[in-house]
Image (cartoon, helix red, strand yellow):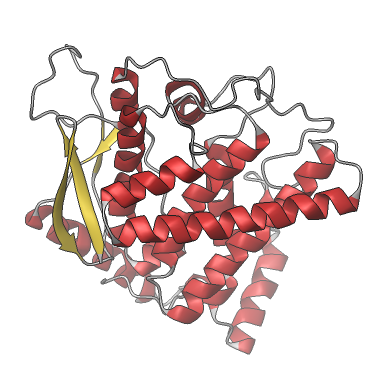
Length: 336
């Protein structure tokens, strides 16, 4: 179960619990016409809320401004042609692959975890706050580094990345165990494989011993963050805010409470969207993080029923198609 939280007029109100499966409606957040006197019923995006703060807070160590200066800049995922958006598998390879899947009766929900969790979902997490010196920040990265005033460092990028990975872990743990565990493992494996390569290629670390020390430290940070966020997820917003303060904000003393509230709203919004997705939708890579300048609205019972029906019709059409490819089959539910 997920505790859904809506933020209205600067106050976080806990709403009813809902099952951890289905989908959600998103809509683009409109800018407030009068930010000094907002209407009580207006729901602001995390970005709008963060920009409302007038506290001139700074990172715990503002001298630690170290945007990544890559000696050799890596591509987002890898140089492999198979991870390129433009690559098309030759027809004969595609046909041979389908034959292998059909002959060996492969479980595509397990096979799919590699390209979906280890490639697509990792790319989403990595790209949220990716930053290099002299390059323009993405809109989402601006939210973290400019609006929330987080330091532009490699370790801060890692903290932002593992927060988003934890959001995916929550949804993966709601899948059938053998599939959810596989998706989590693929995501974690790809994370540390990529970090190791970035330390050598982009951070100019020259010895394997130092890289191993960094990887052990990052592994400890990941485990600690997951435990802390899990506690906040299962308890209340105050506990979640404390976990965000210790991990994302580095426990700095001059923390801006408005920024903390904005992040709690951001996290709860992502969890709500994930809670409304079926296992099948999530497993095939249909999820994208909600940008911080957008808001998430609770669905009415009628909207939930309509979206669920559309999802059922979509996958029933796919599964009942006599020409369906073996690689498109799935045992995961699309009715939850």
